[in-house]
Figure 1 (spheres, helix red, strand yellow):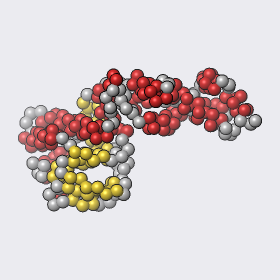
Figure 2: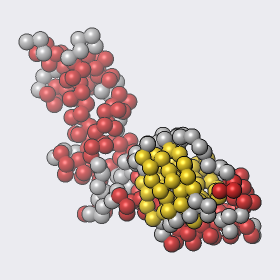
Figure 3: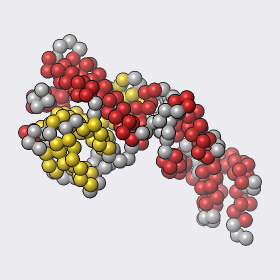
Figure 4: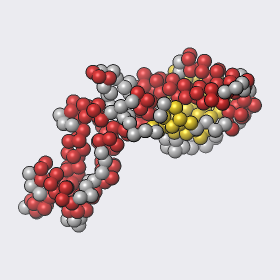
Length: 293
């Protein structure tokens, strides 16, 4: 069924961007690919979205960031955004499903179960893992509905694609221990990724809500993690990084104090001075003068 070129072309022509459980999935392409279709690119390339190659039959050799690997039957490879990749060799019987997509939350919520699925947005390395027998069963159902085209077939195809998304994310989580169950279903989040994100987005006035949403956890869970790792709440942790950066910038005498305030996310000059003095014990102006001594 997967080797049916006609069905694969039909699948590739469908609009498969949709929303389920407050997750919006935007599909750029989705198709079954076999050797006869000759859809394999012979140059390294990268995308602004995620890509999954799910090997149904045979094997293929990939190059990702100049590393070689072989994808075997029963395995899939998750390729993050902007990662250079290329297929350089495939077996005669190679069949795969390839899906290029983006995923985001449709609601301003961070504590719902569906947001756990969006943890993939933080992945920056490719991952190879085995998919479950259930994933293959879902694939069969997807192509069966596409082939038969009984009433409701289009909705069923999109539903099956969402089910594949969930199965793949579960495999990624299990493979890489992205989420670890603990007290109150706490999440283990790599703190070394949170600090750079705060620094990169500090000038925009980053909030706890935005930070929690980016890492697909609740605000309460984020504060719990910060308290466990640093002995302070998430808000205190953000402010501590802001003030550390402010002290660094105050050493640049070409910048006014108002400029420094803006660069660390304070649009209000007086609010910045008040926060700085509360944390450092002296005003930004006096701190700058102390640097001259």
